[in-house]
Image (cartoon, rainbow, N blue to C red):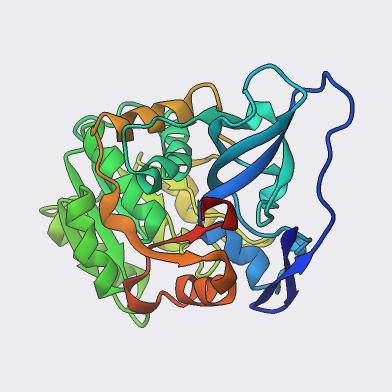
Length: 326
């Protein structure tokens, strides 16, 4: 069978590896066969292969996927059942792999399969919001309008935020933001100072600073200090983007003197967050369709990563059909 090998910086190919086999009869594991998957910004940490904290291994990197249980030694799922699965350490870029049944949930058949798959990234946002206080009536700035920033937009709208300001360098991404729940958008430039961007956001908010700032940029650019500058006194900053091993110097001085609360989150609950996200999508509480932009074949994996990482042609969510889907 095929599995991915990142053999150089931004170089990926599919190679032959041995088929996985289950050991024993009572272990609670499944052999999962992906059918549909999509790329995430956190996969780029392995694809870019330039950070020792994220050393690529065979199977890196993919973790948002729906497929079929082809074997099991557990009792939660039946052979042939379609599930959403999150593989260990994001090593899901394989035709089949072993995963604990605790890291899979049933797929709701009502939405389009691509929309159902977005329950995985949406679930990570729902988990993050459970760490925050009541969002009703808050003004929020979402820094970064990639796929995750867009999912924050729709979640914040659903949970009652008053104004949601989507901020990005990329004009194409900002065109999608109002469809995903942003009440306002702001295009910024790389040569602007943090103080200039903060002043522009205050203008959008009628002279106020946001109660909450969501950092959705992650490893590619470091914007933590921008978030601290933007945030109001006694406000909150949520560091959501996946960091590299070491960040730039964070302005603890500003964090301290503005009495800002800093949040972070990782590893959602498979009993709460992913099933709830699936339900939101299936019931039409949120519309995730606007961020579905590209659909490719596994054989085109290098092109898919290039399109996604370079944000070509308005790329937000890039989906992959595996051979098992036909």
